[in-house]
Length: 149
Image 1 (cartoon, rainbow, N blue to C red):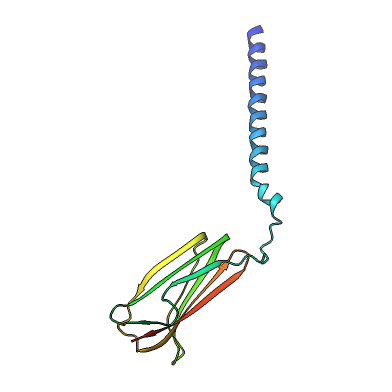
Image 2: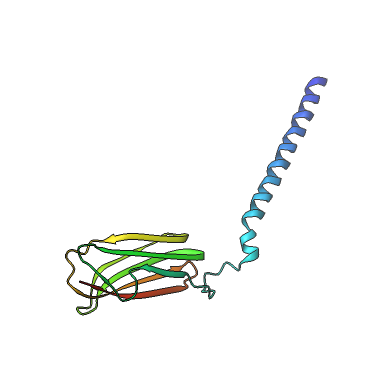
């Protein structure tokens, strides 16, 4: 009987040691995941830091050939991650969209480089508009005009 009591006390001690370890791990995880709340108020209101947006191609007022296609290249960066990117190529004279799409990248850096097949485009003036919105609803937009021959 004496051995059974020693085993019970040992088992009980081991149980409480494991319990304290699990409790300490739980507190550590909870405090580390709450660190963001200490540095930010958790608000998704605009904070004035707009996404940085640069259209690399086509260049402003560039004349492009339908046979060669139209290269669309732009870069966006933001500290709060880019929530949505809207891209639109519009024929200026008719006022119709040739290309219009939106993506939700959820990344700090977005780099797009694509070729628009322009064989069916009419010769004329076009605009490329790129608009980026971050997770705090800050918006940046840029537009370039170009010509298709």
